[in-house]
Image: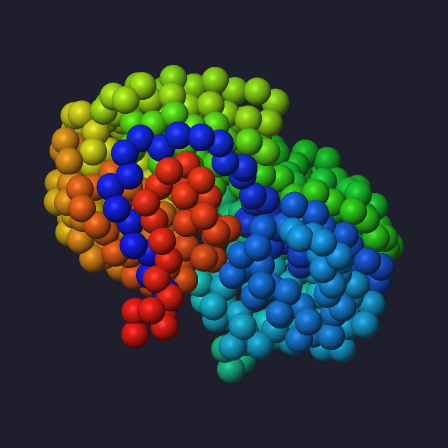
Length: 424
C-alpha cells in the first residue's frame, strides 16, 4: 500500500485552494436516489469515499456520468436494486445514507450494517428508530437492515444525542413523507445545511436547517437540480494548522471563513495572525513557535472532532502545556501513540489528553489509524527533524484530495511512495 515520505519542510508559504467538502458531498450523492431526474453536482472532491459512493450507486443500476473534473451527474430513474452490499458498505460508514432516500422513494431498502474508521461506536439505532416512527418496518437479518414502507408518515422525532448522519438520513426520508416532520435536537453542522439547500433546490420544503429544530413538509415528488458542494472546512483547517506548525504564512482560497470560526479562534490563541475575505483565509505565524491551546470537541458550532488530531500535533510542538478533551468519540486518541514515536510528550487520562509541547520532534516511521489521525501525522512530519514515513495512507485518501500535491505547492517536502516503489 502507498506511503507518504515527509521531511522537515521549514515555514510553508503560498496559496492553496480548498476542495469540496467530503462530508457534504456524500449525503448529496445519496439524495439523487430521491428523484427520477438528473442531479448535477459540482465542486465534488476526487476522493476514495466519493468513488466508493459512486460505485455503490452504479451497482444499484443508477446512471453516473462525469461531464467535467469535479462534477458528476446522477440519474436514478434506471435503478435496478435497492440493495447496498456488505463489500462496499463495510469500507465506508456513510453508505448508511442510502437507507432514508431508498425507503422514501422506492418503499424498500436492504443496507448492510456499516463499517468505516475505527474511532469508536457510531451506532445506527437512531436512524432506525426515526424511520420506524415514520411508519417503516425494520428487520435486522444476516448483517443487513431490511426496511419497507408503503409511504412514510410525517412525525416528530427527538434525537437522544446529536447525530449528523442520523439527521441527514431522516431529513432525506422526511422530504417525501406524508405530512409534516419535525426533527428535534438535530445536528447543526454546515454539511447538514448544504444537504438541505440541495433538497430545497430539488423541490423540498425545509425550514430550520442549521438550528436544532428542522421542520419538513413532505411533498409528493422532487425534481432534478444543480448543486455546488460547499468548501471542505476540515481540509481548510488542516492547511491552516500546516502553516502554524511550520511557522509559515499561507492563503487558503475557494473556502468559506464562516465554516471554520472555532478553528480560527484557536489559531489566534496560538499566536497566529489571521485575516479573512469572502472566500479566502490568510494565516501568518510570523516565524514564531505556536502557543499551546486548550480545547474540547463539541457538536457544531463547537470545536469539531475532525480537527482534534491536527491540533494535538500542533500542541506537541507548542510552547506550554495543553489539554484536549474529546467528547464525541470514545476512541479517537489512537494518533497519540504514533506521535509519541516522534518524541511527543502526551499523557492520556480517559477522554482527556495532556500535551507538553517540545521545541522539536524527530521523524520516524508511523502508521495511520484513521482519516484525521493520518492528517495529524503528516502535519507532525512537516515540522519534525529528519524524515517521517506515514504508512496506511489510504486513510488520508478517503478525505483529502491529492494532499501531497497541495502541500507541495506550499513548499512541503512530501512525496508518495507507491506499493511498487516500496516493494510492499
